[in-house]
Length: 413
Ligand code: ADP
Image (cartoon, rainbow, N blue to C red; front, side, top):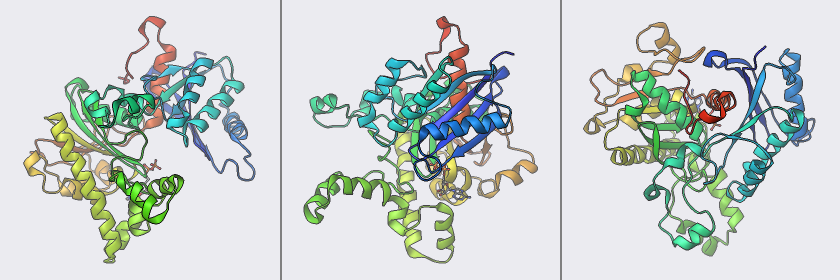
């Protein structure tokens, strides 16, 4: 049996998500998936116990980690700093380097590292690959990556814009080109990844040239619980007038801000329901969210000069017609004309009516167009698939001959 399966692990602080994909022929067929939650509380003592449970669940499905069909494990790693700009085969040195990056991602990298260590203990002989959330953004030019602060201080402490959600931006920008029937190298895309965390990116010919998240995932768009952009002096002001400590402001801006801070809810479905009842706080939260989003869309038109497609993805982007309509409203001057009927259709009903669905990955599609036929700029809903992208990049690395290890994430044909 040839080894064509890839186990994708996303080890968070309190959960481990996994998917097993078969990459034979580049297909990416999903064989199993699951999540082990509440690590550290009750039955699942720690990440070792969590990964043992993952192994047991896979074994029960006849897909055990000892299978010779397993080619590699692909790990999602949040922060790769400036050191990791592509998928990387893991060895002791790589683990140490990811540990060195913990100060840049104290909430995420430690859990990622634990997942890697436990997986390496379970299958020491198996290639394990780290796929970094920051990697796709490593091409951002200095003009966009630099903060305008004292250069020596910035350099001494790694203070610059790294960007996150890179796996999703990479996948979606290429899927959007596929949907348009264009070559990715000839497609300029604005990708709007709107989940609980949210980020925008400007992608020129498949190469990322700007993104909204920065040193950490706090910068940029209004998110479920994060503020996105603020005047940094807000922090000094709150320290002086309210005596708030660094940790308190950190919690305020990351956990008690964004939609939640503005109106008490961070789920766009609930906000939509409240707006329907005339709730003014929910309406204001929506308006602030949309205003920021539109500012980034405008900014990235200027960054790119020419835009072929605006692609909406992740929980809000894929499901909220109201957000997409409000974000794209009145942008005729930029060449955007939304087809509001197509936009409002649920994906499933539009699929049933045929028409605008493109071909795509197994069990899915590259997405659907929601712009008017005469819109100069296409607008699309593109379901993201970070696990498939991680598996694709992992498999490409372990199945390539050493001489043709890809220098950029490759997209399956
Ligand atoms: P993350 O991966 O960042 O946790 P997701 O991409 O899964 O987030 O997005 C989760 C968010 O998507 C939810 O908080 C909710 O606001 C939004 N969402 C999910 N389904 C819908 C829907 N049908 N309509 C509007 N928003 C939705």
